[in-house]
Image (tube, rainbow, N blue to C red; front, side, top):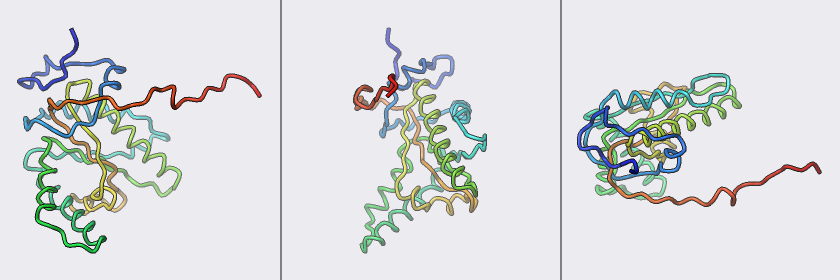
Length: 208
């Protein structure tokens, strides 16, 4: 019988699925429709523990995880709306109430949002390596979520790229946001959209 990846009727750790690595990789998809059911904190901690095992040159541990759930998500509304205002200003337009309301709703679209941030190194090479390490940590988190029957997707956008979120949540000056992970239960359908590996692979097995 195939593993059921749909939302469990009740959060029960004993009944949670645990997919093998290859299955989790192949079935992970970006999901943007979530059930409002809260996720147990210990489940989130499990995913954060998986994230920290990401490849990391020189073991700088550059990632930081800022978890928002329940009423704590309200702190993110200002950051998201500030980004909308900034984008409108850059385009010479007035922001609309509908755009601000959409920004608010987006923050509450999943029961858990994780802002992954990076501690910046003074060395430009290390900084680049650390950015890659942070995204490796994000991928670990996403795969662990998939393996445990949870839906997720990583997001960037203006509030990350323009860092309207840092001042709102109190990130230190040497720390910048990398991505926002949306996390929750979902029954939304997903579809694979990937080309075969052969299309993107070159083989070198002969000397010139």
